[in-house]
Image (cartoon, rainbow, N blue to C red; front, side):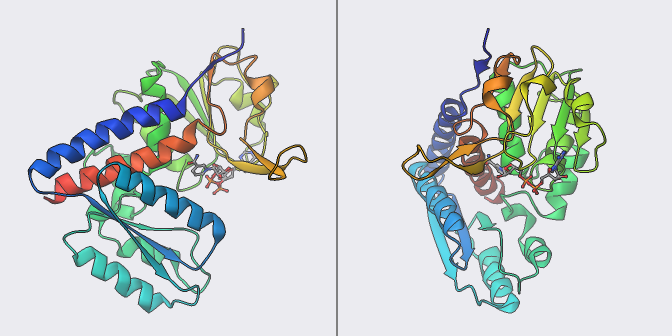
Length: 293
Ligand code: NAD
């Protein structure tokens, strides 16, 4: 029987409705959560992400501001922009859109954002809190979204073999920190695979929960999946498709067709993890406003 689909779009709508209710409660205390996105340069993909974040922020009843800096902006200009946002009481969440132009030291920018306004969860203070299991920090939106998908789909995580493919700072590592905690929606035995892993399939075949974030189109095939496993595909890759109007289509890091014959539950691409990332960004922003109040 083909796997049940985990409908990320529907779960994301549920979370956005919860956030809108929280925003309504904050409005009664005269607090309007504000998210400011800083976009440096004119990378078209970044511009699309920033527009959709802005639209979702406004739909949730929050204030959305986008600051655009030229691709030639200096490190000093960007740092002083972040300083101004850190000091502005109407700004609760600050998001500096990545990637940044090469004259900018990304690490220094990430460290400059006040941890209390770091709704991306990339500041070392928030990274540390996630690892320790302190809940008053911010967890990066994509792994937090994956955990919500598991919890809201009724997946048993306690004691499960959870295999993560990918060790990036924005997905793989924070995902590992979340799933290993002695907490609800976690408590799994976690394995992290990466580009130097010797026999990837030997690991993925052990997984009760397989989370793939490798940025390699359809790298995980059905025969690498344990029958009955839950498969979360974080990957978003464009591949050429002459039959599509745009000339391309989006695929994940998992080969959906073969995987769905083996897995018990699986996320589609698009419509799985993608919509969750924005929903969790909104939730982090509402929480930042609440905590800063
Ligand atoms: P990244 O390139 O920073 O990291 C990829 C990781 O995969 C690396 O740690 C690498 O060691 C590992 N890897 C690469 N090839 C491998 C192999 N053959 N075997 C085992 N491990 C291998 O990527 P990222 O930023 O973590 O993103 C991963 C994917 O998730 C991309 O497709 C990206 O577009 C997507 N993504 C989606 C969302 C979303 O909202 N859905 C958010 C972030 C990233």
